Image (tube, rainbow, N blue to C red; front, top):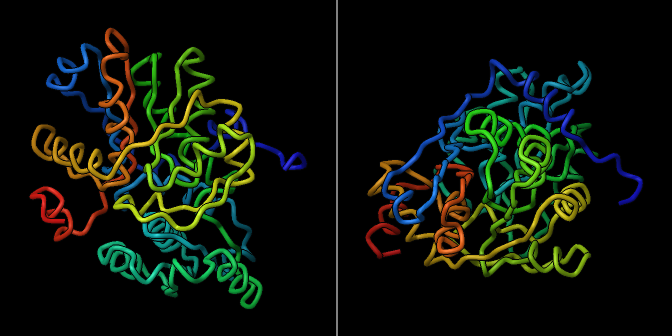
Length: 324
């Protein structure tokens, strides 16, 4: 791990310039209801309005734009539960690069359909019995593909960090920022941007209680591996942080928090009823944690990173009506 060159804020700036014209500058929303309940100013960075519906497009585009002609001709491979899959498939389509995507057999149907719709060649696996990372490496070696993992890659991390850069350039300095945490690409990238643009801001990663490998790693000082967690937050069913993401999180993040699936459903329902936006379960992690801490946030300026909005409509309806 010590031999890795960790990305810096300068790399986030370069990524922002690189993906300009490809990625959406997503809106920052506010809610008077939330502000009154918190006694604070709360700003929601809505990456559910990003291309393909999640922040993942930023990192995917940043990575693929740096391919050589030889890499473009051979193609890209990745493994993902859904959003990174769609992001790589769309970015590859826009750049004319063949894409192979390793996806779990139980990934949300909408995410699989969208990935195929963008032209991705989907290879399915069983997330509870097979190793997606090994499958990806094997495909890369066999076919000469370039592997772009969903979070543990400097170009992916710095692309994701552009979301926080945009947020802070619009809002000014914040007192606290809550970021959804799976493998740590979004959190580590956002932490790089936040430490530069709002140095005193408290940065919190948020993961599902059932899959708190990040919290365990953060507090123990070593990367902790867990079995695939069972949670509705499918984008956070990661088993460990990465060799790039972990040291960046250790250096720049203040704490890792957890929330329950019930907390996620409550947040999802609030987004739908009061803010009129569709947010997937994983995207609700950040707001769910902030709601649990709202008494301690009074008088503060708070950032909430909404990571995405890709959720099957049938499951979404079941979540909102309590029939999930």
